[in-house]
Image (cartoon, rainbow, N blue to C red; front, side, top):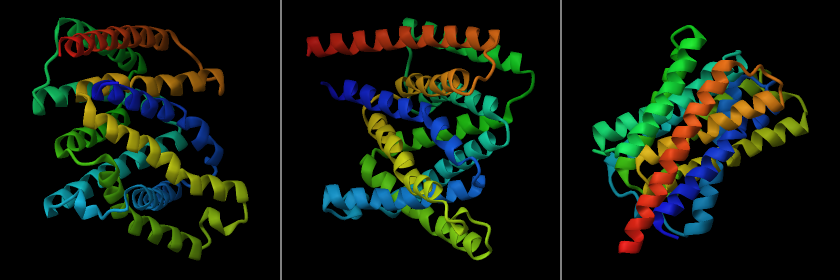
Length: 295
């Protein structure tokens, strides 16, 4: 399998896991949003450090050699923490529609950022695919009836995160390990203060909740690790189109599991976006297959 196709597989796995996230977070929706975020930050760090040490048997400075790279990873860590926190807050405060729309808009942001900063270009078929996806998102936004500020914030924070990961060209495991290490002290401090004041989920002996909060680290880190590996191998544009798998999974869970309403706007949006996704994916696989055969 070529590196590009490996990147597509990593991306599909990553976004498929993210598409199932509502099932997980609904199990602990009785925990405060900020505390959930703190546990995600803390246990993601513990998970990534353990994984890096276990798999590599090397030092981080073997992969990350400059002070500038460490500072860049501090910024990407802050971006992904903001994205996590806003997403959890939106879910717990009744803005599920806006949060889902944000991850539909994000691929278009990725295409824009790839065009502006990475000089990625679209061929004719890919342009048609992009226009179809844009039409779906535009129709859905108009039907929603107001400017979706939460959606825009989610889309651009994750889009800029992906752009920075792409430009840094660092080992995905080492980079994510440093990002999560940066986040751990603030997360640990918050959990300790909340526990001392009796405001933490840890104050009541609820073993299932404890286990779910502990596993939030692995649940968070694994798809991010896959995302980093995908970003190393494929274009930001291709990564953006793959992302439609995630909000589609979330919508299907909302409809089939939680019986949320499925409107005409959803149908139009899904049809146009998936038509664009199928067209883009088919063209991408055909192009890279032809290049591989030629090589």
